[in-house]
Length: 246
Length: 53
Image (cartoon, rainbow over all chains, first blue to last red; front, side, top):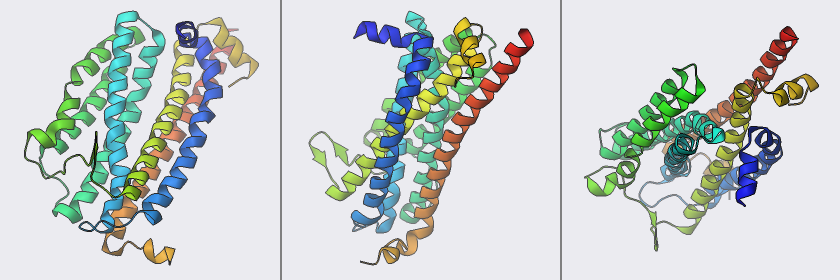
């Protein structure tokens, strides 16, 4: 297993193997999205209090989960790159940032759109919303810092430190609804806890898994591009490009 | 069951369709950006190698 990981972590092998893996993420994403949308729009009922507006939850909650998950991936791979100097870990951290920022943006905007009819306002400076907004700023700061250096090694080191420090915001986001009084509702799903109708849960899980597969596909696509840029002086990249391979 | 009547989503239709529309646009943007960036990188590297040789 370790040998396989080591072989896969070599930029050349990664570039070749990842091309074959991308469809394994894209097709499940498409399939899960189609079934998930059916469940979100047709199979799941309207909420007894919130009516049909609850259907915004099926994009809002998975997007918010992705924003947290991708940040953790970014910080962990940043730390791996910092400690063990693994090039591919730095690449994964770097290419994850714009994807994570996009999901955070989606979580914030769909949250505001859901908040308007339910709370009567687009935005409140509430702990959950504010900490999620800070997460978006952390993503943007990471992207800016990474682009501020010409040397990719220095850029990776500086931005990895920022990502690791910013990790402190993740438990704050997660537990904010328990630690402070909040307009935002608490978690409906937990260990031995499910306070929603089963069809709602199925819709939520389908779209949540679809987003995870989407992240996998986008990560591989962006990482392949970054590998080419960083390895452009290697013989294998030159041979590949001049041969006309993609 | 009339599917189209259900998809009207009562008074929340604009909120719901905006959320799903924005999600679709964001995903499409991320996907197309990844595709075009890769194509542009290959194009630039091909020009660079042709100039060098």
